[in-house]
Length: 143
Image (cartoon, rainbow, N blue to C red):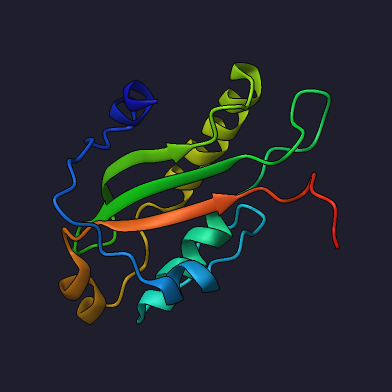
């Protein structure tokens, strides 16, 4: 995965501390692979924009759902993604299925960079790491 991120020009960053807002994680929903419109003024806006960029791979004989990914991103003042690191993935997902989820992640990162951050938000979040969690519940039974 790191090789793919480097190919995009996204440097892998080490984490000294992760700025992870529970409100950001709770509010993030996944969309249909749509580029964000701006300007983004709040952390909630950033979470929603990242979620809207994400598009799950279609369910198929290969993709059954149930994947969980956590990615840590940093942004430049202008909204470009300048660091990305996959920090968690479910290990029990077959390699072929995992590759399709990785492709969706790469597509989302391309689509979301640069984020249309307001000048004020860009100044506030530049260089800080943010954690985003994606969980595919499409194959799970509803209670």
